[in-house]
Length: 142
Image (cartoon, rainbow, N blue to C red; front, top):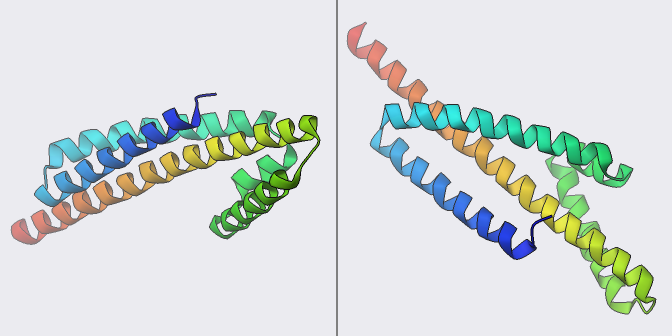
């Protein structure tokens, strides 16, 4: 597993890339957008495969977290914060270590989730711009 600082760096870089794609969308650079959309299809498929792989080997609680809807994601983060509060009071080193590992995995999963959602958002933005361009072309030629 990557260090959380590395994952957050990846997330920041991915956010910047999404920002660049939105700028390209505003410029209506169709060829670049179509190319990026194709790359995102692969990235989304890879992300789904990785999530399925992690889910297959994770505890039932984590599996449920990945399969829940957006509202259950909020509930999971609330549970993580509650567990963090419990960890502060924990005196048993072995239990504290186990909880730290789970918290680190939760953070890594949340970052992976954010990257996946960024891919989905970027894909939707590109698809919308291309659909608008198609409609505009039909209106001009029809």
